[in-house]
Image 1 (cartoon, rainbow, N blue to C red):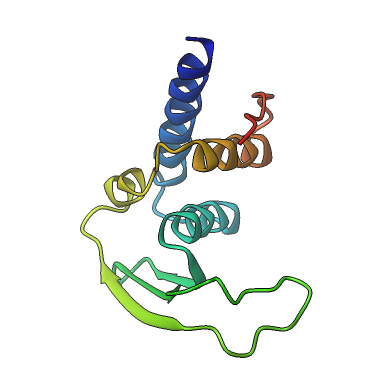
Image 2: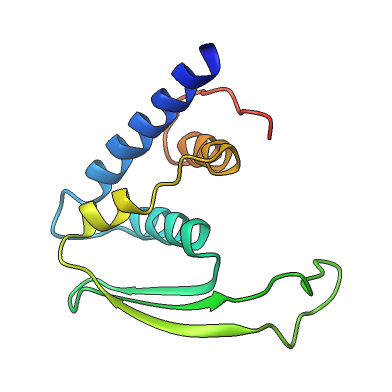
Length: 124
């Protein structure tokens, strides 16, 4: 029971963080880094660029990461170039929040990074 309460709290904090990062007309570098981190996690993307004025997200989606080796330079990764349009950035980012344990643990680290809140990290 404690675990699901923690998951709910982490998801609520992420929703709050997304809302705060999308409030102003001017998106700061810190806000953009948060947005990119959420999109990279959800889409398993290697490279993400957000055009806030045109409401576009361009990214390279990793199709098969079985050949990925962090000890080597990966020159050949199967990727797919995607160009997505979003109507509302806040709703788009909220729809990218996953509820699996690995993602929840990742969100806990994002909350620690982008706020001063100390939420315990869940074990995977």
